[in-house]
Image 1: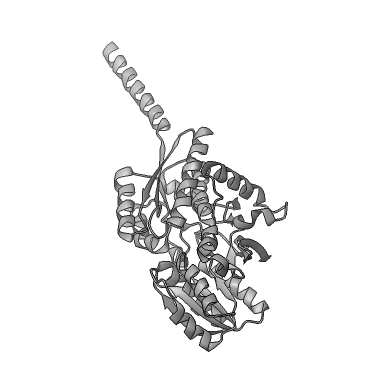
Image 2: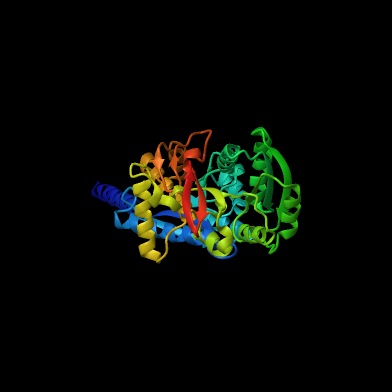
Length: 381
């Protein structure tokens, strides 16, 4: 009898010890980011932000009393390395969620893996087709192309610009934007008069811009990420084109101004409020958070953050809030918590998710800005 009692006590002790150990285990969250390679201007601030937040979260006691362990893999802006990194996070590291990738093409290449594994993916890339149609385990933090295109077209319409030319990059981001532009321009009562494409590694777009110049549109919309749009901005000046040039939100960072130089002046685009935080009204619901993030990032890394770092911030904090609201770090619970997100104030905007919307942003996540004397300036909502 004593032997049986002792055995029960020992089993109970092991179970309690095991439960305590499990409660203390870190919550492992993965990230696949383009820290190096052509899209490093996206991935580096995302990585910096995520690791800065990891330190802050753990210093404050973690999540549900458990530390957070962020495992970051650099895909080097290479789709094959993104695939390998995703496999490693899902099969070896057994993470509860994954942040990223930084670029749309890499996200599109891996996102079905997360549906199969039933682990949430919170992408830091913008292409609308990442979340449309909705896939249960796939979310994203950047504003969708459709919101950005709508913001540009509404602005152009007020200016009386009806004949629109587009020039887009032939990668995942550019192709997704091109599809939306080709749909929304005629739907807005405007005319698409030119549809030019350039390669991600092209260093001269004068041929495409010359064709556009000869058509004499009312406005040009460029859809791409650095460095191509900076080349287009410089080529436009070299060709003496004075037609208004709109850029996508994919260039909303100081890096673009650095690459384009004086040719950046006068360009217009939709952007996150982050790059003009100091110009916002004091009662703006995001202003305090934006200024706090700017200070923390600048103090830690010696340079202001970009909107792209904001995508990483929101991806991680949405996961953290989902875990808290669900009271669990199991992947299915994290997924449910993400989908139930309501009025979450992030860097990019205020997120409200639903089973029909895994981005959760509306047009208020953008302001129209112009580049004047090498600096950003709000010119409209």
